[in-house]
Amino acid sequence: MAVALDQAASPSLTHDILRWISKDYHDMNGSSFQTLESPPTAVEFAQLVHISRPVVIKGFQIPALKRWTDDYLQSKLREQPISVAITPNGHADAIAVGPGGRLFFVEPFIEKFPMAKLVEQLNTDQDSDTPTSYLQSQNGNIYSSRFFELPNDDPSEFSALREDVPSNIPWVTEALGRNPDAVNLWIGNSRSITSIHSDPYENIYTVIRGRKHFTLLPPCEGWCLRVYGRTDNSNGLSVIPSLDTPEVRWSSVINPDLPGSLPPEAHPLHVTLEEGDTLYLPVGWWHYVKQSGPTTIALNWWYDAEVRGMNWVWLSLLRGSGDVPSGNDETDTR
Image (cartoon, rainbow, N blue to C red):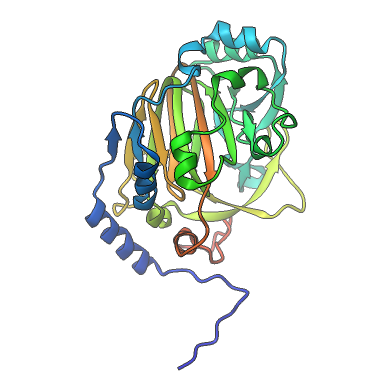
């Protein structure tokens, strides 16, 4: 019997099917993660990508690990203005309550000032009620994809630091057959938080200073996060809804580490990265990130995911490619 499909609508899986997939995946893989004592070869990394589970990698050495003190960063960048996210509570790119008590996806206010001011703020911003500063621009702020085509025409606020950061990771680039789409610098403190989300990238994340704490969920457990459509907004430290912007899909789970925030069927992994540790975070994995230390610095290399074959189609289906309800629809009981 032929079944007519609505080409304009994206299919979605029922919750019973998603729960079954989640249980079956956990039964086969458990709640552990692998740790490598040295970086893999390209062949070994290709196998890790095939398995698509997080891996902690030790011994990935780059110059930034030995050089990046506060004094060094200030001396290299001098008065160069850098883009810093300013938020009331450290939650940049996250859900917040706006006018009328409605929920909105909020982008941070961006302010530009020299590295010396950021260092001062991070060192005095612990456990206070003042706004939180977090360098987290995520736009290829060290290297963008343009660098690999026109290396002399890829401006960066952090060009003075490029000698300390490789533009690509050889064993990843060889395994995937491509250069990174973006290399990003992250600088924050214990108040800086990355809300739970997933990315369309193979992610290599290295801690330079401080400590990062990851809560991870596999792609098949996105249903645990109640992903809704939200209206985009910005403008300063007040929630001011933007006009005529599309809704943003984002998780309504503010902190997955709080008891009761996830259903009992969820199986989060908890990974802490120390200085010099690297995390391979596969495409599609949900992650929530906190940090500790007066100043925490990290770098990450985003490599585009392979969209050929079935993997990307499968990830899109698990993520819930069908229509999602509004986070402000009080009639929704899902």
